[in-house]
Length: 33
Image (cartoon, rainbow, N blue to C red; front, side, top):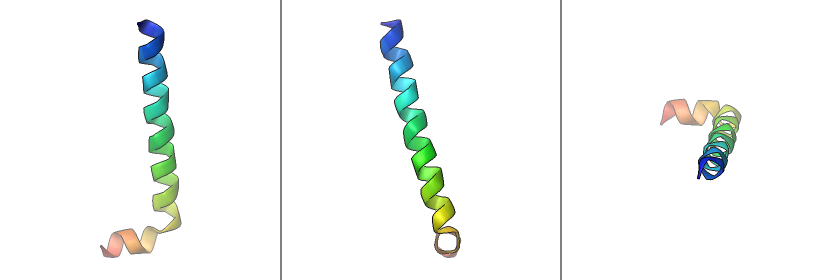
């Protein structure tokens, strides 16, 4: 149970990092919107 929770957290962190990088690439477009 504990290990599964840890794994889930890591997955979320990975997704967040990917989103952040994407925003950085298109900063102007996001701000305009």
